[in-house]
Length: 151
Image (cartoon, rainbow, N blue to C red; front, side):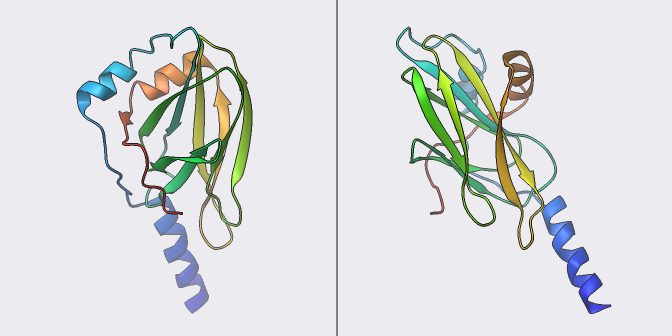
C-alpha cells in the first residue's frame, strides 16, 4: 500500500504543479513573436516548451555547450547562430539528450523541448518542429530570460 501511495505522489508531482522561471518583458516577447527573418549571416532558433506534463519540473537547455536557460511550461528562448551545425542539449534523467541541427543563414528554426516520464524523475527530449506549427505554438508562449542553468 505504501509503495502505491508513493508512486501516486511521484506521478502526480510530474503531472501537476507549475515551475516558474524569470521572464523577459512583454515587449521583448512580442517582438520575438513577430518571427522576422534573422540577419543574412545568422539563423534564428526558437527553443520552446509547451504542455502540462512535468509542469513542476525545470530543465536546462544548452546551445553548443553554453547555457541558454531553464525551461518551464509555456516559455521560449530565441537565439541567433551562424549557419552550420549546432548542438542543442537538454537535461534529462541520467545524461543530457542532444539534438544536432544543421541550419542555414536567414532562416528560423523551431525546437520543442518535451518532458517524458523517467525512473526517478522526469526526463526531457528535443525535436525539430516545422515552421508553421512552431510559429503557432510559440505565439502562445512567453519569452524567458536567458541563463540561470542549474548545472
